[in-house]
Structure formats: C-alpha cells, structure tokens
Length: 55
Picture 1 (cartoon, rainbow, N blue to C red):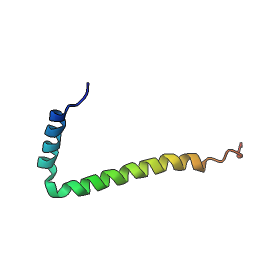
Picture 2 (picture 1 turned 135 degrees about the vertical axis):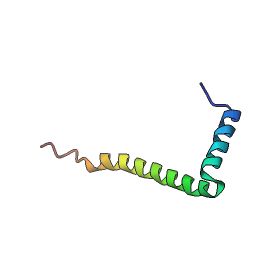
Picture 3 (picture 1 turned 90 degrees about the horizontal axis):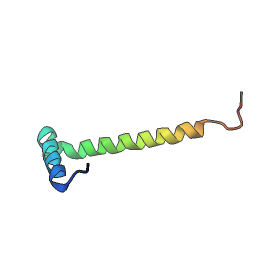
Picture 4 (picture 1 turned 120 degrees about the vertical axis):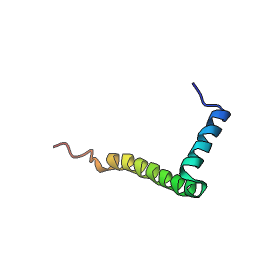
C-alpha cells in the first residue's frame, strides 16, 4: 500500500483546513525540532554508557 499524489494532496488540503495556512510553518518547525531531539536522545543514551564500567 503506497500513497499516490492524489491521496497526499487530499491529506495536505485537510491539514491546511484544520490548522490554517499561517500555522503550517510553526507546525513544521515544531515537528523538525521534535525529530532532532529524538535523534539526539538516541545518540545520547549510547554516549552516556561507559563501556569500561562493568559494576
């Protein structure tokens, strides 16, 4: 199952109607920051573990 152009266009139009065109940049910025924080959290958990500490 894959989304075609028409389906994506309909979803985009629904998002514009729900949030309004002026809110889309803020919504995109918030989503981008959330993804960055999630990736940073995943990398941070690996860096926090000390391989020499075997207590």
